[in-house]
Amino acid sequence: MADCLFCRIAAGSIPCDKVAESEQVLAFRDINPQAPTHVLLIPKRHVADSASGLEPGHAGLIAELFGLAARVAAQEGLGGGWRLVTNVGPDAGQSVPHLHLHLLGGRALGWPPG
Ligand code: DGP
Image 1 (spheres, helix red, strand yellow):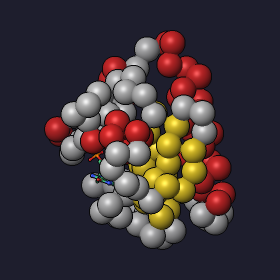
Image 2: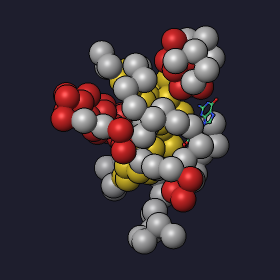
Image 3: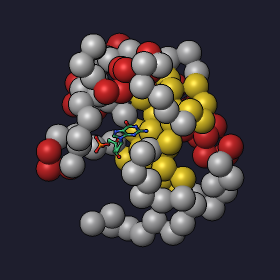
């Protein structure tokens, strides 16, 4: 989608600090990090605005998102643990309507998140 920020990052027309990629997924550092490691994982193609738009046909993509998250966590040395978050809608604070996971780690994250 031409007017979607993360589509433009995936296309390379807006720069990002890339940490990894797989066939369908791009991982890059969040511009406003909430932890020492804060990486966003996005499908390169705009399949849904959020997790609420996912369908059974996206199973392979979802596995790839989680698989790349685990690879990045290992790459970042997060042996002590890490967290994946996906915000859906305004009450969750979602600001970019392109499905994405936040990978957070590098400090004690606390639970519940607040
Ligand atoms: P969410 O609030 O769940 O929609 O998360 C969107 C995240 O995207 C937020 O943590 C900040 C990040 N972000 C917004 N604009 C940019 C950008 O231009 N580059 C990068 N790397 N991250 C961005």
